[in-house]
Every structure is written in structure tokens, then in C-alpha cells.
Image 1 (spheres, one colour):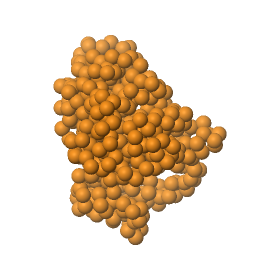
Image 2 (cartoon, helix red, strand yellow):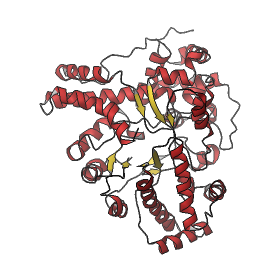
Image 3 (tube, helix red, strand yellow):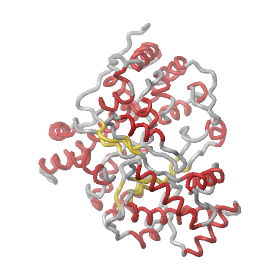
Image 4 (cartoon, one colour):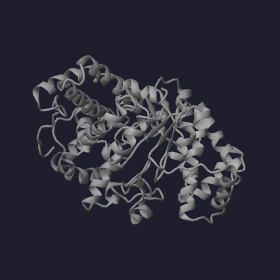
Length: 474
């Protein structure tokens, strides 16, 4: 290594309050949860990793290419995605040496100072790979060689890391056309790691999805149903939900642009569906159909017991040039203003009082925490609040979430933490950040005599471990 670099260290008090009284309380609380198993009930890791258990290729393929948190920042500073080895929409890549892509990243690692990505990545570098110098242009090759060499050993294969990270259960997310062959391979392998799936039907629910027409045809082929009839289409969903549940799923997930729902009569729904499958529909009709399908999915959840998650409020693929070149999930999705009280009312009028129905709500619009989501979850038996998500799963966002929902929803109408990530090695780091922030928040309540410390200690364990298991039926 040409440059010895500056020391990389992780302070044991990171994210704890600077006030000495609160810091001491936070440290005691954290000691109760630091070693708890990780429950990761919703995310986007690739089940093929655990099915095949093949070594990860190199530092770039593992830590840079799958992580849109990382490459969106680099793109914002003028780095083309091709220079980082990000695949094109057709699956091909520009001819980029992965070492060179890593150097581009390392030279700009200072861009991440103070961001959650720096917290997660430095945790990975320090705790997983034992690196003790900071990443920069001078240490880029040292990092690349150290990480890539480590990945060739058995201790860094996906299953070994799963066990090393003390992951009790992890849920991936698959679409309705997925055969779940990787989950079947895991089940057949004799390995004890618990990797579940979750049903995300967006591709056959959103008429404006670019793959909707073709996906609908394959949906019919897979299920053997006439998916061009309303009744057959609904049966096809029940068919696939049953298959996913048999493969271990405990939840569904729905990534809609808004939280608008609808409760049409059967005749109205049938007529609307006819326009959808004909391809002759307006944007308003597409939105109405998505809203109706959220209510239909709620009805199915009440029947089959799958927990329903709703992740609304995102303008997907905001950059059309990048979408054409690289496809989805390349860091060009942006938050939208969201509304829940009126939007969810048709669904809640039917199912809001059902104790056996569970709907976990997320938001990218933090203004809704105290105005809508907290009061709603503090009233309806079916509603729970998902944690600070995506653009807000930073220490500040986690703190704001607790501050703005505590007075109306309390702690026990929330579901703990989930990491919602494609970046496998960041999972322990993300959970550690969440545990530290929650312990810091609880420490303030103890110092202000709003909680006794034994209550805070129980809460810390609930938030880190018990609540996600209960909420997701794990």
C-alpha cells in the first residue's frame, strides 16, 4: 500500500448522547441488546447467495454494485454508472475493471462523511474485514485486495456470514412470477439458516409498470387461471399467495405510488379490470385499480394470514435517461408527498377493526408521522408502523420517527427495525445503528424520569428483537 492512511476506528460510544448521565444509561441499555440475534423481516438480499453458497466475487461486486445508496451519491457528483460497473438495463456492462471501479469509489469516499452509508460501510470494513486504515485513494488497492482475498475463504461464503452475523431469520422479496427455486434449494440443502420469501405482486398489479402486459400473460400461464377475467385474476393471486406461504412466506409487500385505496362493487371492479386488460385506460383508472387491489390484498390477507406491508410515496425512475440505460433501482427514486387518512379509509372501513388482519405502514413523507400515521396506528387494531425507511433510515430519521409517533402510537404499535437492504454485509451495521439510536432515545426518557430503567431495558429488547418477530409472525 503506497499510503499508510489514517486510522479507522469505531468508538464504543458512537450515536450515544454526549450528556454523561444519558450516555451511561444508553450504554447499560445497549449492553442488553448488542448481542441479540438479528431478525430481518423485510429486505432484498438475493436468495441465490444462500442457495448456492458460492463465494462473492470481489469487493466491487459485493459492496458497490448492489448498493444504490452508494452509487447514487457518486452519480450526483458526476460519476457515470458505467464507470462503477453498474449493469445496463439489458444485463450487459461497460468493460470496466472492478479494481478500477473500486478506485473511483475510494477516491470519493469523503463524499459520504456524516451519512448513514459511512456508518454502515466503516462498520463493515472494521468489523467484518478487520481493516484499520481509512478508505481513500491511497488505500484503495489495499482495501480491494484485502476484501477480495477474504471473500475467497470459506469463512466469507454467504452461509458462514449469515451465521457469523447471528441472523435468526431473513426475509427476501420476490415477485409473483418467481419460481422460488432458490428458496426450495435452501430448504433441500439441510442448512439451518432461515431464509423466507415475501410476496410482492407489483408487476401484475400496476397497469403502468413497463412489464405489466407480459407479466400478466406469464401470471396466467403459471397459475393456469384466466387472468383476463376479474374472478380468474383474483384466483391467480390467491394461488400464488398460497404457494409463497407454503414456501415459508409470512408477509406480502406492496410498493405503490400512493396509499389510496378503493372498495368498488364486484360489477364496478369487473368493468374497471376489463379496461385495464384491454390497455385502454387513463392514469386515473390505473390509480383506481391499484387502490382497489390494495383492498383486495387486504381481504386475502385476512383469509390466509399473511402480514401486509405498504411502502408508498415514491416516484420511481424519476430520471428517464438512467431508466432507459440501466433500468430500475439505480438511485433515481424520489420521495413524494403522501396522504393516508383519506386514502386508506375505504380499506379500513372494511378491515380496520379486524384483529386478525395486520397492515404495516411505511412512509417517505415524514410530515405524516405525527399528523396521520401515529394517530391512525394508535387507534386501528390492524395498523402498525414500520420503521424509518430508505431516505430516513439514518440516526436522525430514526430519532424523528420515535419523537413524532411516541405520543400517539407508543412503542408497541411499531414493529421494531427492518433493514430493507440489498447490501448483505451492511445488515449487522444497520441493526447496530438502530439499536444504538433506540437505546439513546430510551436513555433520555429514563433521565427525564418518564421511564424507569428496568422498563427501558425491556423496551430495548422488545424493539430490537421481540416486536419484529411478533409483527411478522416469525
